[in-house]
Length: 192
Image 1 (cartoon, rainbow, N blue to C red):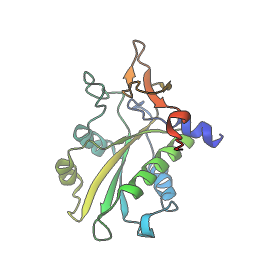
Image 2 (cartoon, rainbow, N blue to C red):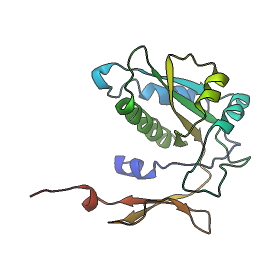
Image 3 (tube, rainbow, N blue to C red):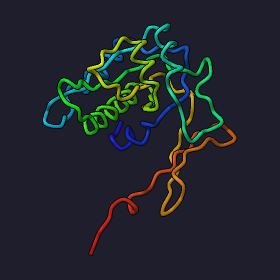
């Protein structure tokens, strides 16, 4: 797959085929990718928790919020839920600044997932205290985000927008998830 195709196919999937597990090996392969990406000052403060056991996956699910723009949608139903998660942590004994590293790592995880036939979604709206308690995460680690993983069970398309068009994603009457994206000429600026 060409890199451009990989990037455009790499979408935020929120509905998965719960009957298709994501293996520990697949999660390890994804996390290994982030061993090689850039890190601010090369501090490498990010750590990860693999959640693949069905009981743990089910226990984590209620602590995630799924789609802010889809106010009437409570999130994936039974049969549509992820089969694995990667919990991204920031080791505060190494650094307290994670924004650059976490963005690079999250997109790398999603691109790797897409390349291997898995879909994912970055979830940052979390009940962090409950997740900390559930996974017994020490206070020295900041809970940054959760990457949901599974076999995609939905179609996600990119809609080209410009100017002041809305950036709010939506689902049409057929359940297709539309993601408005600004195009090149709106992003690449020139000041004279």
